[in-house]
Length: 245
Image 1 (cartoon, rainbow, N blue to C red):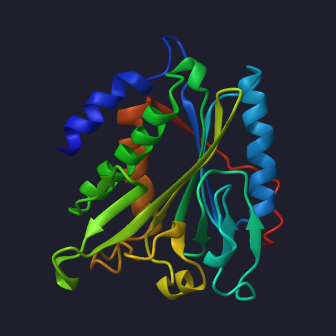
Image 2 (spheres, rainbow, N blue to C red; image 1 turned 45 degrees about the horizontal axis):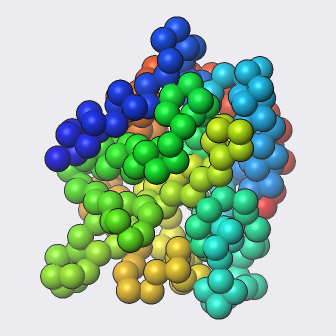
């Protein structure tokens, strides 16, 4: 099922013929949220203008909460626990922190498929294919964005969220992206109602019994990304980092 979903989307999001590979950057250490947003907005503008190549940027943030455009004040349970950042991405409240792999995806949908629903489905397929490599069955839901894992150990209907998706698009250039829980402190999610969902919990690869490191996850993410979105080329990460919050 995973491979069929991936295959059905691959042709939709491969770059146009002759396009350069997507730049693939990884930053070690913690990156301040405002620094990341500043870079993404500038890069997306340059991509839309045809002055820069597409890019995927992998990083970690210090512990913080972000409020998407649909965030509800009541879902910020502990407003003083961590810094809270207003975000232009879609969605509600989410948590970022060490042990979570954030992937900011800056693509030009004009060169691919200018269809936001298909783009989000492709991001979901990317996460599902990545989890599949670690023998975890990730699933998408029609009524809520993200990727979910059934938890039979918690009951027949129990499921936890393992990855979040929040995007923004300007002139068909995308920014923001996905966050995959590898080994974050899951108790940090209790300061918010993650993505406005109260009926289910959150989990991570390590929480599910998969002792994996970020570099191991990164290698798989690159392979599965290329299967859906096309070739990548490793580059040095952005330099405008202050390591703040």
